Amino acid sequence: MRIDRHTLGFWVVLLGLIILVQVLVSLGILSPFWETLLKIGAVMAIVSLGLNLIYGFNGQFSLGQWGFYAIGAYAAADVTYRWTQMNNASGLTVLFAAVALVGVAFFLTAKLVARLRGIDPLSAFALYIVATLIAAVIGVQIGIALIAPVTQLLATLPPGLALQIVYLIAVLLGGCLAAEVSYLFGLPVLTLGSDYFGIATLGFTIIVKVLLDNSDTLLGFEEMKGARGMVGIPKTTSWFWVALFLVIVIVLLRNLLHSSHGRAIVSVREDEIAAKAMGIDVGQQKTLAFVLGSLFAGLAGGLYAHINGFLHPNTFNFIRSFDPMIIVVFGGLGSVSGTIIAAFTWALVLEGFLRILLPTGFETWRFVVYPLFLLVMMLLRPQGLFGGFEFPYLRPVLPRPYVPETEEQVALVHAVEEATEGD
Image 1 (cartoon, helix red, strand yellow):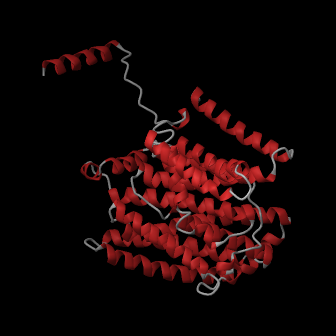
Image 2 (spheres, rainbow, N blue to C red):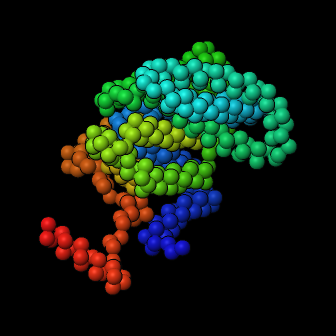
Image 3 (cartoon, rainbow, N blue to C red):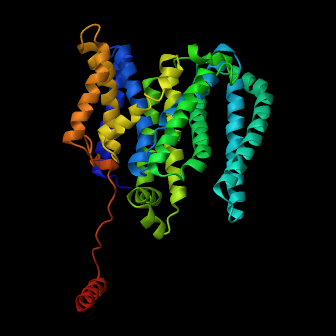
């Protein structure tokens, strides 16, 4: 199989940068401060790529990305906290069983709803709610029964390896949980127009933040400590993990956008009526983009939770929910390359260079400097910093022009051209 030189160059540069950062971290040349900023930049890139899929490519103005980010963060943190602090796999088994059974319930309910012709959206949503509750209750009971054997199995492994396995599964489960919540939330909400959809998703983010404030009392998760903030989370997220997940997200998003599903997603953004006329299921494409974007947010949340080892509900308030939106707009709507570069720029400039360069006592002025910079850029370059620019590997692959090879093919082309000219 022949590899395009642009593709090869992209991967050489990307992997070279990842390896360079890892070498600098291993040798102690890169301080923990800048290493943390790079990890946060990668996490923000994953969150923003998910939002770009929802808003930039599908055209759905969403402010709920931060809520799904919070769900992934707290879900993954609870799993690893129970393993390291409570010495059992209760969080892992219960969450895994619940997520798996709820996914099966979604699949079976979708099959049932498809057979019930003429069912209204609210009735279908009620069926999903009932199926979700039943599956969640059964999943919790199965998960409780699996705590002892799974804990014993993981205890036979070296402690470091067991922690890495629990951490990896926790991050994946956090992303899956965020995706399932987004699917359930999107059933009634995705029927709204773009502006109303944005308001609804903003309300969802506020609801999630209020639930996290009362997670120890209302939800019963005492280890999360509610508004006091969750501590004791293992700092397991390394540069290797965030870089690996970022690469996977980039490849998944690139392949999706270059597929027929990706073209259908973009067509919904351009004109919903025209997309329906072409036989595209607009609701299905909106749901696909919304769920996949929320999955990316949940994965990023799980990674973020294990960077500093501390989570606080204020980190996920509705003001902070505009951060990925700013990154997407700054990098350029519909630009994967612009979103990635803007995310790292946001982390390094806002939390790094501005914090260092501003005089002592004026560090908070950085929250004034970068909005002003964004305002100026919107006036001078409203399409974003990169606009429609993409790195060669990420650009859509255009079909090659047809070149006739045999004499019969050449004669056929000439005949078609003559017939066209005659018409």
